[in-house]
Amino acid sequence: MTRKTLTALAMTLSLSTTPLPGHAAEIEDFSGAPANRWDFFSDRVMGGVSSGQAAFAEGRLRLTGTVSTANNGGFIQARLKLSEPMPQDARAIVLRVRGNGDKYFVHLRTRGTLLPWHFYQGSFATDGGWKVVRLPFDAFKPSTRLVRQVPAPASVRSVAVVAYGHDHEADVSVDWIGWD
Image 1 (tube, rainbow, N blue to C red):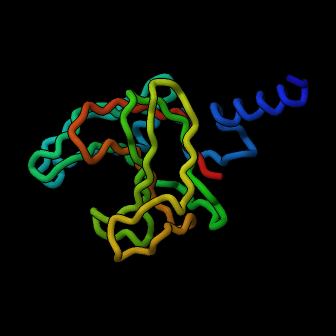
Image 2 (image 1 turned 180 degrees about the vertical axis):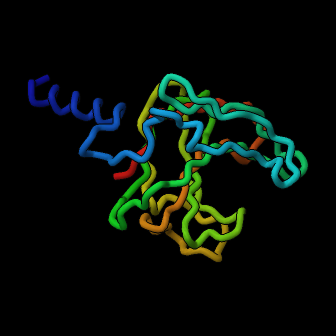
């Protein structure tokens, strides 16, 4: 390989494994007291039986628990209310994640998602290693037809990391969230 090819490959690998300043703006780096900013809840708020916890250590969120679809349930989540809006020209939510090989979700709530069951959902896969996930806003699906098809970035009010939709043992960690 030529030096130019090796340099390009090294840049590609660094961009795919680490959020870099200038490429994504930070929403959360889990420093300080993240437990004071994040809320955990499960389907028990509506009669489900899923259980879990959101723990914060070593600069990361770790969402673990048992997701059960029994009794019309099926989720656990940790949610962050944004302290300031993203710009309207933001293109994607970016996360650095690690998980147990299952599929997980990001839920966005906006000014237009008024009811608790209204949100936008984007998914990502995990494979045991740390990786950067980029979820373009147009990849988020609305939970209802009563909201716009694509969330407007400037209207996003919260971001949640969610284990959802099927019976499984959840274990996902996030150490950085931003937008680009």
